[in-house]
Length: 455
Image (cartoon, rainbow, N blue to C red; front, side):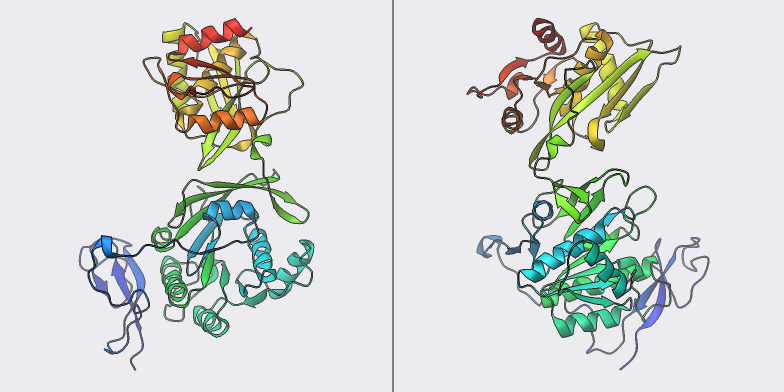
């Protein structure tokens, strides 16, 4: 049987060269040749046969749809992000900064699955088996029967998966795995792409759920080829400051559940613990209301969370500064212009600093109204009433637009004891919410007038 050969394919024109060259001989593009594997000429061998079986064309209405079965991981916050649990044959890619807690969380999840009767395998390419055992003892996982394999060669990993047939396997990390079919070093684009493709095919063929741990670049994006994210079923990002004890897992892609779901964890001496009430993290505990603070309700996937928006307005010079942390800086400049034009609140010679407490990043425009009210409160030096919150998108014409799923936001606020809310008129509930007084507004100047009546 002929052995697979290494070839070099041009990213620009798709041309093939038998050896690496600095310039493509077909289109003359520089540094465009990437190492790949040429299939054997033997007609009986097909490396991609496991991807899909031969099928006939069928009408969509004639296909029987069924819900996928999920296996809980034992970590409620991780299950929330995954859409309910691990799916048989699913491939999950999880990335994050070094030391953020990826290996810790996955080892905890594997131990919980193993204790529930699932067959598990932890493949470590960055640590020895003794180092993994030492971490398990630190996490209090004494007596864990999770199977561990310290290996980075793809062919041996695939042979182990075929022999043991685990229900779930973790590859930590995909950047350390290499294939003998390629001559490039582990972590190169060709190696990462080829190894991930083989592992994905193995998962689909055997039904083993595989979790790939990926490195990230300086910008925080997953390292390696972008095709890696398209190849897997689920992409998770591990976020958080290493100086803080709180971590966020965000679903960027999920073929079996909702995207933009987040799970909140707290790092403890015994590993990562799920936080059932994440709103408490993002709300500062003030004995009395302080100027420049306004609480809003944001949506992370299907979960409403209360976040405190803080603003500080101080006298600036001829070139006042505009700085925001956790919010869009360009949007802050736009809101200041709307505030001046339609509400008569000028910050032309003032430095304006805005911060979302707890390190959370808010990308939805529903934070607009809370940001404007926090800025107004800081500028006037008067705190907002106790138990006050606001949300709503603000347009350039000064109108306050509705936020999606406003009812759920208000119910979450009432559950946490908030008593006064300023919301867009379209989000005002038809039925009163017990304990919550709602002021529905259509324009920015109406929202500021409500504040004056509440003082």
